[in-house]
Image 1 (cartoon, one colour):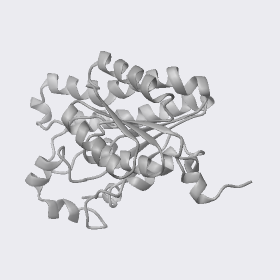
Image 2 (tube, one colour):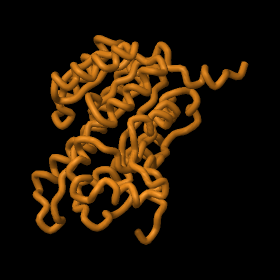
Image 3 (cartoon, helix red, strand yellow):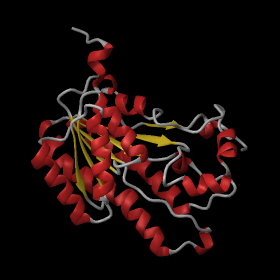
Amino acid sequence: MTRTIQQLFDLTGKTALVTGGSRGLGLQLAHALGEAGAKIMLSSRKAGDLEEAAAELQAAGIDARWIAADCGREEDIRRLADETLERMGDVDILVNNAGAAWGAPAEDFPVEAWDKLMNLNVRGYFILSQHIAKRSMIPRKAGRIINVASIAGLGGNPPGMQTIAYNTSKGAVITFTQTLACEWGRYGINVNAICPGFFPSKMTHGLLEKMGTEKMAAHAPLNRLGDDEDLKGITLLYASDAGKHITGQWLAVDGGVSVVTGG
């Protein structure tokens, strides 16, 4: 029998691991999955931030736990995967969101900063996806992987932005998503990406302060920045059976910034 829309979006009984989940976009994604019924394992580097985030989710009636781990370190990633599987059982939904940014002119961009961003923003996604897939998703022939990319990965920068490593890493995440979807589709694993535009967050605070919040909002056809609700819908679509026939895709959630030409 064809399911109702409420049944298709229901995540009751599912388990989600969300990296970079203690604040900002990651916490918003965790809220979306938890509000739909999933159990949540949060991860980021700082225990204090995770404790606060888990308490916020629990206050909303969500089963939330946390593990502190640095997704730029392979040993931490493997520990995170192993401990999550031990404590929560199989992982149905993996959200790769942990990331960093760095601003500097391309001609003076520090190689150490380049390596740090590639290591966390790309390599970390690969290692965690591989570990969770081999241990939990491939054996069950089921799973959802959601990679947080960025509209920065779709092309160059507007004037005033100097983030070559960040843009390159997010472009890599989009191609990583497409390639993984092709390889792992036979295992029943859907792999998709979200490309947020400008959302107020700790990562974007300095840039928004420099460029001006109103000016940045004016670049969007909708004349606004993203808010605490704007990623919830696409996250739930990718994670649930409502999106079971969607894989290898990316969607910009940016108020229309990415479709403006000549800006």
